[in-house]
Length: 538
Image (cartoon, rainbow, N blue to C red):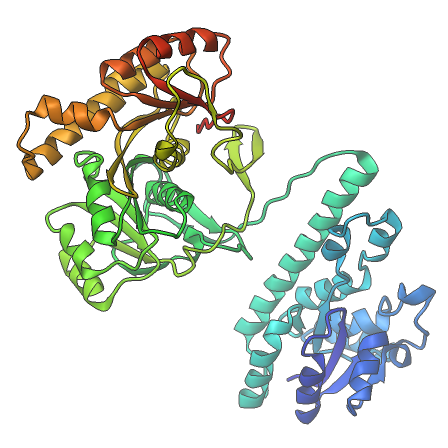
């Protein structure tokens, strides 16, 4: 039962309503400074902490709750006869609830030009101590550190007259987590300002054990980043299918990031396998984009992950009939598409992510290596310049296709080479890709060009264009764009591209042999653009 509650908050949101609710339940309220004033001004009876301790608030409010009559009232073990006798002897009254939130340290230090003295003054001492004392004795004391909890605590008190053991335990963990985050923020700031040291503290919660890791014999878990803004797998709602594995998360994240690169102006589909987009396209409709993405590599699409920025409809679902897919990630599913896909397979995971069209909430990425953590800014943008460097000018009408191809390339593991095709005016698809090779020329001649021809064979047989396959390939490849994620160290990449009728190439440039590469491109009548921006992805 809650008889006495101490309220002392920096964030006054909802505190008057909460105090009024407690008063109506017969709870005696103790408070400090500004909190006491706002509660008293609302006509609610409140006892100042100074009346309890017998000491005034001191040193500009730095010292007010640090007193045995406060912390004794919190830490006293109610089941201990010795503790209760000592409390009685020292005239310490028990406190059953603490409601505290802390000085806004993180907000203060995030302000431009903040002085050290201001930051120091926003280091809360009494608040964390109250939270920790109450949380330590959670079997008897309810501790609130978040205004969002006020409502359900009042509801629980009104319905049963007490706060359940389960609720108190959850609030205690939340309080300790809150003070841990607070201390971490202070450490990060002061380490940099006072010691010149960079400290990186990451927090992930709600750990979930996965079926297995990258391989069956490895264990794995997924942890969520709290307060994450923008779309992320942590926010996805699973509508159907078995639980996700480690690889599912990795591939689905790649698919999400790849689709996000293409924006929201047109339906887009990414098909990912082994952390590479083996299919990527835009289209006038979701069905059209999905078909074009699948055509990008029908073999690799087996057992893949599909992500789209469009609500998944029945037509798109029916296109997957007879095709094995691990996951579909979409903003939503129409009712008939959802029922169709559920009946298709009990194991197919269907993930709904309503805010998929929103911007990502982070500008950094992290990668753990044994003994350390790497942090970098996200690879944002696709080029720093657009410089046509060959005698044959790079046609402006190829710009949109080239930008699509650049976005596909930056989502593909290095050394990455992408061949992209404008299969209809304003609609683009990846026709062939080379990924993860130790040398760039293999990505072109053994992978991207070979896959493009293989994929064109499938489309050719389906469409029956009435010309020879050789002529069909030449006609299409001669209008495609090829993008490399890094510069060409030699001119052999241009030679192999030209041998496959590629006439338009985009590269960052920057090699000591750029002159040789340009000279070869001129000799072969290839148009070449340098962007000045590399897109390695490891």
